[in-house]
Image (cartoon, rainbow, N blue to C red):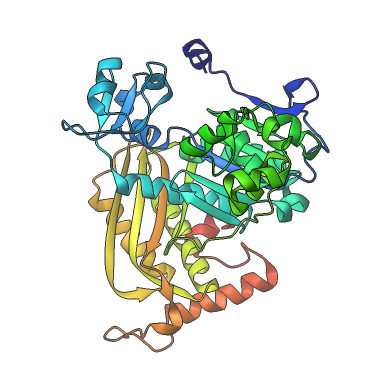
Length: 423
């Protein structure tokens, strides 16, 4: 993407059609068999730093080591127009882009942002296979009845990531992992590309052989020596010839991929040992009572998810995002594991107070419980004077009512007074 396109905010949203990339129709049956999504966050580390440092917006941003041997970990799309890319020596990057703002990597911030994005994915489908902090495969075949076709689901995810996390992602939609991943690469940044099954080879065959999964520098050189420069060239070679040149395993795999065949399934990976929920307000909020109610609602939601999964956790984390998008997190490790909303909310309110932000306008608040483990393996010590049947049992009774009659039938009085339905 050129700098001019970037400044115009150009976004690719389309499908591979007979004439190349065509606009994606509002409704289409072309994606019926394309249930695999590859989602790749755009310049993830740099984008998170821009949220943490709003003053850097509009300037080229580079994340990486600043010492004499430092390398670039991430560069935003403005910096990339100067030729900066990941793994480049920082000294060279700053020669190419001397006006860049450089931030050292902050792994904890990236991990928390990744967890929030994965929470969005898992609210759409349980079939989520994270590949790294900034990319994942999803199988959305089970979401069609609720949400529509795969392209519609991809649009929904992109919208939620932008609205709830102020981040952008690119999504490839296809019938296989391999093609979906290539599609997301072709539509970056902030794009969506659908490759209908009938157009798979038309999409693949013009691409260079280096686009094939498993083709590194040496394999690419070997293929080029035999005059194979595109994926289509590889597809035209008999599989036995490829096996003879590259070995049985690699030759067979490249032959299959070049024809658009990839049988790998999305393999769900258990989420990190944490459970959280957050809310972006429609308008920025400075009213402490409103913030307290939201912390209570989120604590109820997190506690209910813990109990539903037979889990407990020990560390409570609060996320507070100001109107200018800067974000503060605070955490506290409890004396005992818990799945009780009252205990989670008590810690969350204390953390909010200790952050010193009670006079500030907030656009988002979140509550997360970390250090999650199976409740059956934890012995909980009753606090002095605590009855054997107490808040946990009361909340379990509320769970049973909710399962039978639906959400909102029974809830804390503070929320009921406001008519808030905790979904």
